[in-house]
Length: 146
Image (cartoon, one colour):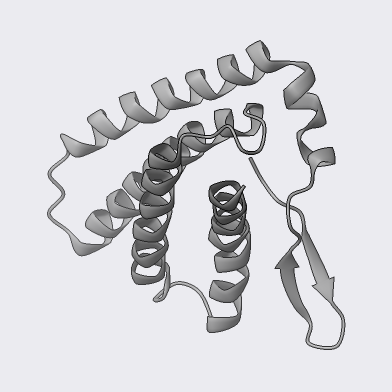
């Protein structure tokens, strides 16, 4: 799942636009393909994470790189959990699943700020925040209220 950021010309910032049903048309027409894609993503991220966790870096720069790769694996795992939710009609979601996804997203959000703040400008972090988290949190909130 991704969002397409739009440029806000007055501020120069890129904001993620909210998801719409149109964003999910392909997935809903091809549910088995969507599930297969995200299942393969989940498997690849799980295997990669297991390998990375075995590493024992000594240098700080290597520790940082491994931390970033582990973060990326966890982001992919989050998306793999979230994606199948778009196949469920509004009002039919399991609220416990949505609450867990939201908690995972908020944890990843905090971790992202910690990991990327030394690499990105505040402006870039704001864009990352919009595209990686706010759009998904808004979607989860919408599903929890329906």
